[in-house]
Image (tube, rainbow over all chains, first blue to last red; front, side, top):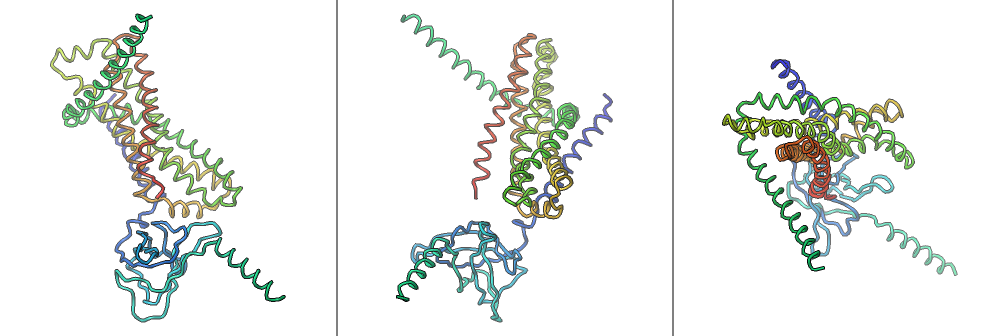
Length: 156
Length: 264
């Protein structure tokens, strides 16, 4: 086979492979989930994190503003400490309320920020004071049952 | 009685030592291929020629089977997802299945049977017709001139072929899922983009296919170089290439998956 035709075919092959890789990384995957620009760290302490996992999204008003980077157990206070990386484009007031929510009935858990009205904003390394733990379904049911039972005894 | 036991143990020992010697020779051969690849990389047109025969010639089979695998995935996953009312996750599932597993593995299996067997048969025939010995007589190192270019061509081609396979598969899933079964086009792509991570999924898939490329071409060139220089020997070596490299691909895939996706 002629050398230049061969080179042409190989060039076409390599170009097709690179196009396929580009398609995969631009159209199928997204760069901005982990390789986002600058972030800052925030911490939050929860009594119970339920099924929260590292890399879970942090949402405010439904928009993803950051990700959970680390979860560890504080053996002194017996609580969970969650470290989060928040996109530096977004600033949050110091009285922001962090709650652990579930997307859908059985979906994954995420941290939701309910923004307060404090004029001062969080700085990197701050700890969120106001948190609400994950809702554990079993506890909720047992609470409901106890309430029902006590209602029954009061009426008699 | 004692004599029979003796013969049996001898046979066992011989088969173990000869297998170990072959494995040792294969490792030495791999190191020698790397050591002598300087010539191949300097005279790059040798590699380009082999990329044509291993890569370009495998492109049709890879593209067509990628398309069909993606279309089957679209049909099958849609059926199951529909039962749970989550057909919107079709794009995510098709893309993750292809990029993480099926793309690298199936492309490597096809590559082993399409290109690996051809490499073995070619080198084996060269050995049987004493072309390799003739080269040595002319002070041309057959590993540098024949083996190394084929090895590097395989290593270069494999990741590109796997990427083409995955891309075609996702297009096939799109054709079936969106055009035929009526999943919303926007949901299909946005769900996919939300859950496929470039570093975690796509780069790991490329690393997998790169490793498979090394494994397949190494086995292929070794079997060809080591085969008995007879017609029977060449045919046996070609069969062994396909069987051994298929098993090696699946085993290596398990190990790589265990390291890459530990469920985090």
